[in-house]
Every structure is written in structure tokens, then in C-alpha cells.
Amino acid sequence: MAADSGGADPRYHQNLMPSMRIALALFLSFGAGAQAPRTPDVHFVPTPAAVVDAMLKLANITASDVVYDLGSGDGRIVIAAAQKFGARGVGIELDSRLVDQANQNARKAGVADKVTFLSVDLFKADISQATVVTLYLLRSINLRLQPKLMRELKPGTRVVSHRFDMGDWKPDQELTVRGARVYLWTIPTR
Ligand SMILES: C[S@@+](CC[C@H](N)C(=O)[O-])C[C@H]1O[C@@H](n2cnc3c(N)ncnc32)[C@H](O)[C@@H]1O
Image: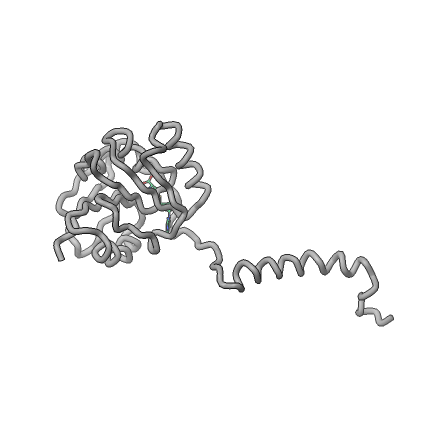
């Protein structure tokens, strides 16, 4: 038998099979139309509790609000909105481990019936039901997101951002809490 045929040698199959299995799995998951997992646009850095409170107060949250946090991390903003104001909340978070953590935190806080966490890309999420949107992303992401906010959110929806502004879109209000800037905008009538 030729030295490189390997066909009858069981060791050849042992070496070949795992890599073939990986290639097949990759083909089935990505080659057949599914997308490779997306890398988050920004890492998880939690908003401090005092800043969360200031954001919710600035947005004048009430029990009739539906608060969407785009890039919700451990869920703290929508959980606080539900706990302190009785609002409903939806967290949009790419990292599924953070979604699991947020669900656990919501159960511990006793608001699991009021909040939902979805493992989706914030640029693809349906945000049309929001009455308040909260953000702690980056200025460049806010600027990319602005057309979606304008297109999908109802006029009168409040948008609150921790630390990062929206360039030429000037906020209705801004304040500083423990050294952190917080901005509020309202979606205008079209
Ligand atoms: C700076 S953290 C803010 C977390 C939380 N909103 C807070 O203020 O405590 C940003 C979060 O956005 C998530 N993220 C980044 N890019 C994303 C994307 N394209 N879609 C959904 N979530 C994303 C990150 O995984 C991270 O948890």
C-alpha cells in the first residue's frame, strides 16, 4: 500500500474523523445559512446604582412605561425600573451568559414577571414597543443607532444615555451624577 493512502490504517481514521466532524458541524451551522456569533460592540461595564437611579428619574419613569435597555448587561437598569417604578422592561443583550445572569437577578429581585431579556443584536431588535430607551454604549454606537431610534420609536419616547451624547442631536436635559454625564432626548413628531 502506498505510504500516504492511510485507507486501511485505523489510526488514519481516528485522526481524520474529528476534523471532518468539526468541518461538518461548521458547514451545518454557518455554511447552511446561520450566522457566526457576533462580537459585542462594547464590553460589559455596569452603570453604578446612583447613575441608574438618576437615569430613571430623568426619564420620569412611571408604571405605564416599557423600558428597553439596549445592551442590558446584568439587567440592572430594567430591573430597577420594574422594582422602583413598577414599569415593564426589556433588556437586549448579545452575550447570552449576561442574559442568563440578568434573568437570575430579575428572579432574585422579584420582578421576573415584569422584565424580559433577549439575546439579540441591538441593531436588529424590534424596539417599537418602548416608551423609554436607556443606553450605556459608546458615542460612535449612539450615532449609528440614532437613525433606528428616529425610525422605530414612537414620538414622545424618551431616550436616556449614560456618559455618551448623540453629536448634533442636542439633549433636552443633561446632568452630572457622581462625575458621570447623563443625557435625555425625546423622539420628535414626524
Ligand atoms: C457598557 S455595558 C452596559 C450594560 C448596562 N446597560 C448597564 O448600563 O449597566 C454594554 C453592554 O452592551 C452589550 N452589547 C454590545 N454590543 C451589543 C450589540 N450589538 N447588541 C446587544 N448588546 C450589545 C455588551 O455585551 C454589554 O453588556
